[in-house]
Length: 167
Image 1: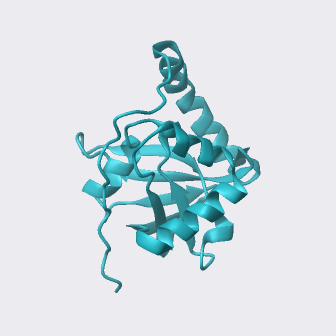
Image 2: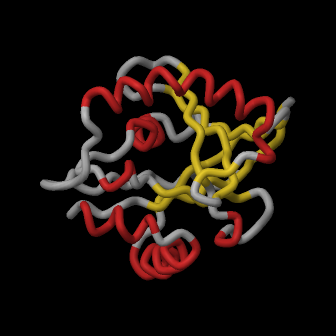
């Protein structure tokens, strides 16, 4: 068994983008229908040209199961059972909630795509590996470069490595 690597949480930024309150409320309301659509058509859906996965975590504060649909970068994964995701939060000064969930409960993380569910081990990329991966991320999806310019926090990159498959 592979020892779990820690999720390193960089400090919060002092500046970054924020959605207006009405947009945050709209996004919250649309998450349910979006997740239903993803479960039905996930393999064909894309956001910003990126294929999607559904990340299942356990809430850092609540302890309840949480689901979020994220873009992934299969071109950057070293194997088919590995996924790379970016905790950009659209350039906010804050890390996304799902990132804190990974840090608090790294042993309770799954990804889903259609009918497949895979337990994964999360690991933040650091140092040269993170920097090289970041350059590839922004070459594949330039909007992430814009996110970096909006905030002064380090945007984490997470590798999710599959352990086994469940149905």
